Image (cartoon, rainbow, N blue to C red):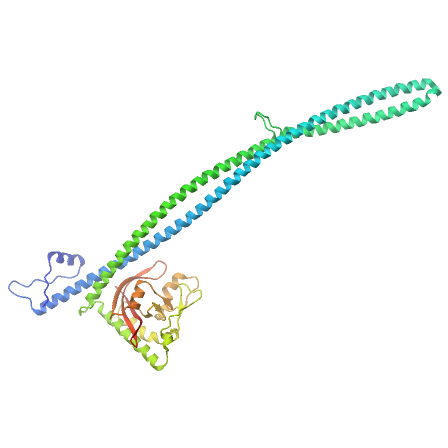
Length: 464
């Protein structure tokens, strides 16, 4: 005989959880009857069932949120790692720039030395031109004097008459030649003058004061280039230092994120244990023989599983389905599908016959979201018709919500339901509908056994 008397703390907790009034104590001197005890026990079990359901709901939501945070942390760590690699690439580029800058500075220094050497050569050329000009002036002066001598000789030859005629011819020739020499000398002087001006200008452009007080235009340009290259080198060194600091900071951030991810993983494991405890409590309540809110769904899952078991056994007996087709696990990818879909040898049979079993249960009870069969690997060959839509290329969100057939659901819930061999399994989880949208569901699962061999599980999900 069971008896139960609520304590004050239990009464207080029932009030907070809104689980209904607690059973009243029997009046003094009157023992509880058998029916009263059963009623109290039933009421207690219902209260525990409601509490377990809420615990399961909260645990599933908590676990889902921790999973989201963990995934966000992992993505953040990957992003930081990728950014760190980019910064390292920038740092390597800055190092290369620094090397190139150093090479450019050395090249400019060499160029300045070369220009100084050229300036010295040009100065020597200027001096040589001056010497040539002086020689040309001397030649011009000598030619003038020769002309004067030749002119005097011509005068004297004229005075000598016939005897000086031959001398006069020579004097005229010398006078003409000296005139040509003088003209050539003047032309040379003009040419040397023009060339000297140009060379002098070039010398001024490339000349550099040894004390550094004055620079020609070429040297000024080289000095400007040298300063610019030095500035670039300084900027590259500064950028390299900043990149190094960023790399160190991102390493620290990445380590912190990884620590957070490990902490979240541990928290997720605890939430998983919490969720399993809640689910076990729900199952215990459902398995105690007392009718609960989950009992109709458990019976529905078991009934649908029995129907599919008989369907598959009859198909094997009639030859509609071969053992090879039934137990085929060599899944063939559907090219371009996203999320990934695969094909199996059972698809043709399941598309023809599974809907007759699965679809009616969607309307048999309130709040049923789906009723599907999956093999032991979580593969769903044929989903409910509303979720058997053809995928839209590139539309992952729509496909996730509406094209759920031909997919392998090997997550925690999917595999647990597919591989469960107990009479039933109750789970609580968040269903991913794509685009960051989730639906919190309960799921009752029952094993599908064909000729004594476990094929998979019947999954019936329903709303809280």
